[in-house]
Image 1: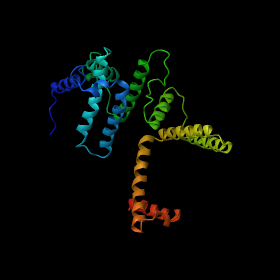
Image 2: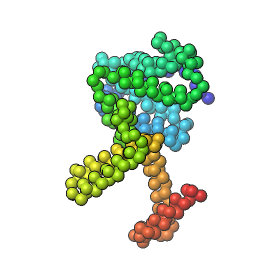
Image 3: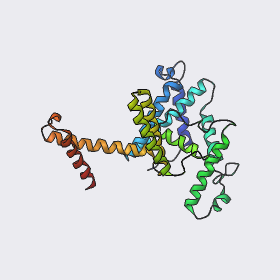
Image 4: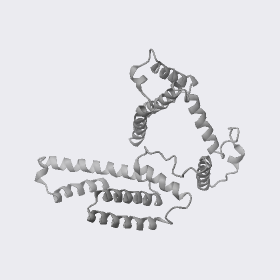
Length: 278
């Protein structure tokens, strides 16, 4: 059963965090931490939330969301300790941002914008497209004058996700291939440049061309409406699952990998793929 929200719940968590960071009676480990040392834990906890969702382990989700919330509270406490900002500033910032970026939901005072909602019409797909365009426009307006469109796309994002965001941000001002076929041609071009770099024996050039090739593939996925990060995660899962079946085949036949050439191993692989389709 869903627990009713109690405004005291977050207050209790803030009290716990303040106690952990108390300069005299606090926890030595917590007192040693700063933004830089906590950031990796924040990323890890976000991934653990995503892992629960991917595994459909929703019974574990409240616990993992709590761990992620604690990271936000930890950063806010460090900010307060350094007289930079506190948890209230974090909440105020996100509330103002959400109200500002959803004029179709809220009025200028932050209340429900019933009139705007009623005027959106019955075409839900069109409404979603309008909301997306409005969101992007408002985000652009929020940027300081002269700031690059690329600013604000986090360096710590997974590389595939960051590549998609970079491409999408550039596309918002028309710097993009006209269609998926244009990106496909770019992939062929990047493959040719990679071949040339390999032939030249320049490892630095090979590294760069591999990166360009991957960036082009990510944008090809974007044009096809595919999230490259999600697609590769699924491919990773399929590979691991099928390889486990190959391992099972090897074990059933004596367990000596050296007894099988690549053709025999490919046969195990084909069997694993066929078993998934059955």
